[in-house]
Image (tube, rainbow over all chains, first blue to last red; front, side, top):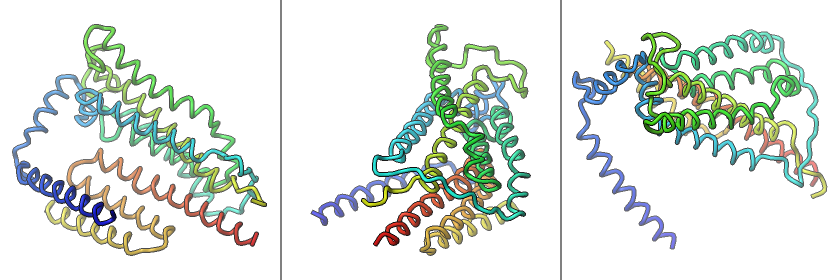
Length: 245
Length: 86
């Protein structure tokens, strides 16, 4: 049985390797001057006044793919929340406040606002400069946890109402879906970027629905990461097994 | 010139990825992984993909190591309470 499984894996692996090599041989040369995909994507992005072509690909040309990725993150975080919840044979124990070394505290509290601001900036300028909802969301959410390094778990819990972030997580996904459905109602197609005026090139409001979709993703990712880290932290610091079992 | 930078970044990635595999202690592995994430971000930026570089920097060098560290802490704490009881 084991040998059969290994054989099956070997056949599958060999097939995948052969296909990948064949595909790589057909790719345009590395560092060459011919960019068939790039040229088309840039043209489509400029036509809709979006300065960052990657944002145009993510939230306009391939907005449907982004919806899929967003749902994957949402489902993954939901699964983690279910797995890491406080089970029947576990109990919560308040951790003792720990002594924080002074340089660590000073550094964490100094960098915390900078990290939060950077995250929000990256989200807001998604359609103008590299970055966007996903990157900015992760930066802002992990930046918030500098408070755990600089102070303690209790301080973090006070500034992070978990219910609020769980709601924001779902609202972000809903906002993306509603923006997509709005295209259908307006008579074009799901997630088609024809709803809003394209605006002036290279400004915060340019690009039609792209900044809105980007903001929805930013809200979803930031809240999802906060919720995920909160449950990991709970398990690592607070929840322990019931003694006597 | 840019070719030289690409080669250096690639070599750094290969070296730190090997180090991450060779290191057997999960807590230290998380630190090496964090460094690998940073070097990968540099490689992506050198290859003119700053968007991917930024994702890599946020997820690969901050979020993933943090999740690994928290899991390691949980597993070790659990082992400690079990030992106390027996």
